[in-house]
Image (cartoon, rainbow, N blue to C red; front, top):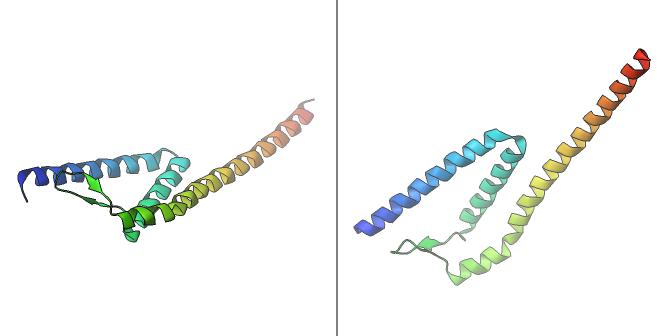
Length: 116
């Protein structure tokens, strides 16, 4: 392995570590970010296990074989499934918030009837 290839490998490793740290920070921001990161990690893991990620050439460029490109197109449904999972969780949160809103309104009506 020559100097350029080693340099590119180190740069990719640093980028992977940077992304991993940012994803860990995003998970702590909110439940929505947590769900998003989980879906991204699931999609990435599925792509890697399916062998559709590609490889790097001696210049550090990511290349895909035609077979990988065809499989990636066919497996696009996994990305759609991840998006739908995120949307479902967000909609469930909105439903829960709506229920809280109705409880607060009922409480305010009760307080107003006691005061008046």
